[in-house]
Picture (spheres, rainbow, N blue to C red):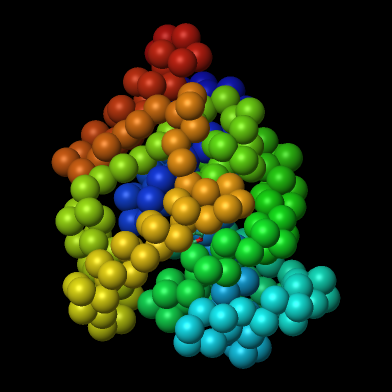
Length: 233
Ligand code: DC
């Protein structure tokens, strides 16, 4: 199917399956997939490694600003498992998905200069076009003119189970309670922060995938794109 060279913005709460949907869309319609959350996670990992955030989530803001100003290099490399995030030569894909990073990423992502740093990178990637990007503020703030905006939701139980299964598959050993608590905390911080909080863009279409299979999601998206762009197969 011939989808034009547009930007597709996918937003929603944590663990609603945004990245899974974005990857499916990229594969099905030959788009480049960009995971904006990975960049916030990358900044969080570097901040933790440099000792710039303590257990109470107090952040050494001047030091974090210097770290980002010193020219942190983030880039994605395509692999059969999807895009992998690198900083310089080092692949940090596994570390950024840990519960340790998940537990502190939302406070880091609420810092305005961190958002400006990530937004710059996203705009650079997005300039190439034909991109599907997922996050919390892609349709509202990063690409408000995106031609297609989806807002993905799922029930809290389904989300917690999905995130739990994903972490176990990656060799982590969380309890369901830890996963649920992390999701609740991130939902709250992500939707209540001052700078570009998570919200549905007025022109975003809602997909509740609690009871949908991946196949149904892609059939839904295909139908949506056909209608939106008047595509006849
Ligand atoms: O999608 P994710 O769970 O990997 O995102 C990790 C965190 O990054 C999320 O809790 C909030 C933040 N984030 C954001 O604030 N804005 C985005 N566009 C993407 C992610």
